[in-house]
Image 1 (cartoon, rainbow, N blue to C red):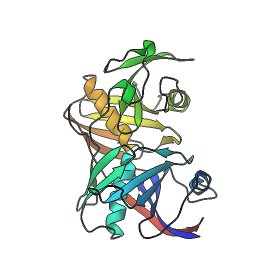
Image 2 (spheres, rainbow, N blue to C red):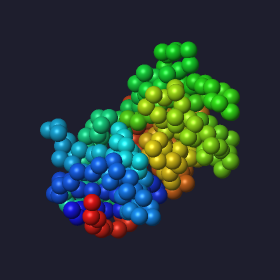
Image 3 (cartoon, rainbow, N blue to C red):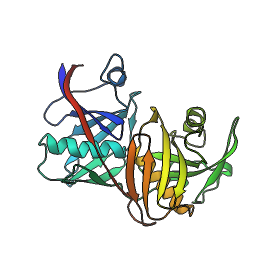
Length: 280
């Protein structure tokens, strides 16, 4: 069967977006992996599905699948693309949109300039809820932890969930950070039972960081919205950052705000690449 889709990106983090409100399809993990292939398929970091909500107080259900076919709880760059997609496809007439995800509800606001403001909700810091198993099974909610990593010794990191888990490592230079080698090791570390997104953060000043993220089930991406949120939260908790931070990722910049106790707010751009149809 043929389905319509849009190819979109948020700072180079690219998505295939499919409306399952006005059309019907079921995509298996094998089909998703084929569609994600950049030589034989559409090519994307994540597949975003727009579905009819199961709750009465939201507008849509928002589902996210990695390029390996696995479903994940949240994606901040995807949420911005989701908001622009449903508005421009006239699935909704309002610029303020509420969606349900596997990790809870989110509020999205499309600005007249087509930037999107996303209320990402509060960060999750309790290790058991990240989920993260500190060495020695320490149940405390610390600002940073150390884990043993084969070949790299003891690595200090922050453990934060923004609906999906993030390990945040401070580095001196983002360009020489061992993202390709250390990223997959951290992703699969036994301290993270659901695996983890590994973020490498260089602090420029208290309102500016650079960040690279090795995403679980995907690899390094041009940008990661939840990773940017997790990095800023971890930096604030560690006393390195103020409450409003510019986050420079390989694909562009986001603005992240957190007052230290409430919801995390992310603002950034989106882009439409093309529309198409594919036979599944």
